[in-house]
Structure formats: C-alpha cells, structure tokens
Length: 102
Length: 156
Image 1 (spheres, each protein chain N blue to C red):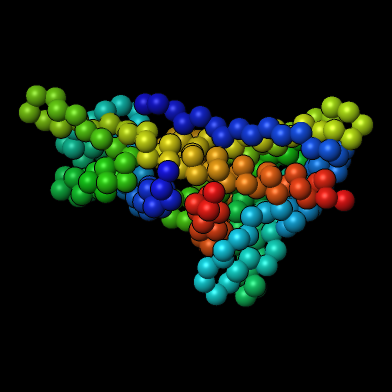
Image 2 (image 1 turned 60 degrees about the vertical axis):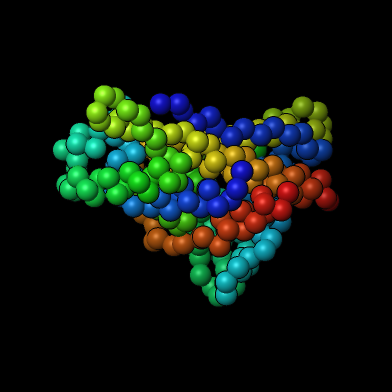
C-alpha cells in the first residue's frame, strides 16, 4: 500500500465539510442534491468535495438512472488501517526487544 | 457500508506482566519508532504519563510537545487503554478518539502474552454521534511522528 494514498486520505478528511459529507454517506448512499440539502454549502461545493474524496479513494459513485448516487468506498480507510497495521508490527517488535533486553 | 476491522496484534514476551506493562508505558521511549525524522524538530523523547488522564506525547528536540492522546484506562499490570488522537490533518485533535487497548496476561513465571487492539478506525472517516468528546488539552501537531511511521512502514 503506497504511503501516498494514506496521506491523501488523511488530507481529504482534514476538511470538516468533507468529514460531514463522508459521515452522511456512511449512513446511506446519497445524491449531490441530497447532500447539499443538509449542509450549509452550495451544490457545486459539495461536488468539489466529493471529487476530492473520490480522488482519495474514500467515496465512489454509481449511476441510478440519470443521477449519480455516492457511497463510501472503504478502500481509502483500508489504506489507513494497513498503514497502522504495519506501524504496530514494527513498534511491537521494538517493544519486545526492549522488554527482553534486560 | 463496510466497517473497518481493528488492527489486532498478539505477541509473547519473555518477561513478567509487570515488566511488560512498565516497559510499554514508562519505558515507551525505548521502543517507540523514531527513525527518519524530518524537519527541524526530531523526536527527543516519547512519554506516557501514568494514570487515567495521563498524557501521551512526544517531546521534540526544540522543546515542543506533540500530543498523541491520553490514558483512558490504567490497570497495571494487566490492561492499558490509550486514546490515539491523530486526525486526518496529521495533528492531534482533542475531539478525535480512536482506542488502543493493550492487555498483558501472564502465561508463566516469566512469560506474558501481550495483545494490542487499535480500534474505532472507521472514525478516521465517520463522525459518529457521540464519538466527539471534550478533552482538555492544547492542540499540537505530531505530523513528524506519523511521517516517521510512513517511512518506517515504507522501509519494510
């Protein structure tokens, strides 16, 4: 897993509005219009946030007739999880060495 | 919505539970990854303050404290729960909490099973109702630590 993808996911979720969008999509799939209706931002702004989230691998969309329906893409978070997974492998190996070192 | 499973690690160390707990907490500076620091303030010392509410932080060489989180449960020598509060902008955020639970179970006179679970990882993306807790603490970045993680992970 590229570290760049983790950094991208972190950066994408740094924005509070994007976190709100992500949260709403975690509840259920929604269209841009539905997202904009519940947030104090314009529809084009929502679209822009969705683009950033999609580029980070955090959301994806499907076609439902003429409209796009957005949903969570767990791959972005899986990258973060994989990153922490490797971190703890390394940290605990060092911990074991420290515990057994004396 | 697929959930994000916790990171779970299990290892056996040749030491008493007391010692394992002590090295994990008081001795964190001896094992906390610190390779490849960037910028002008490398990590000087990693600290977990004892007791519930104790701060978990890194002290950088320029004197800045970079918070990681705090102690949520302190039950030596058997159990420790830490709040890991690094959010999406690479900084400590008192409103963001993921949990790291570590248990130390004696399996022999000098054998201890250590189980670590880093959970609530979905919170990196999902602001679930109730997860935002008010925690009194100054904000402080510790991006350099995470970047160190990234480099460490990348080096493997």
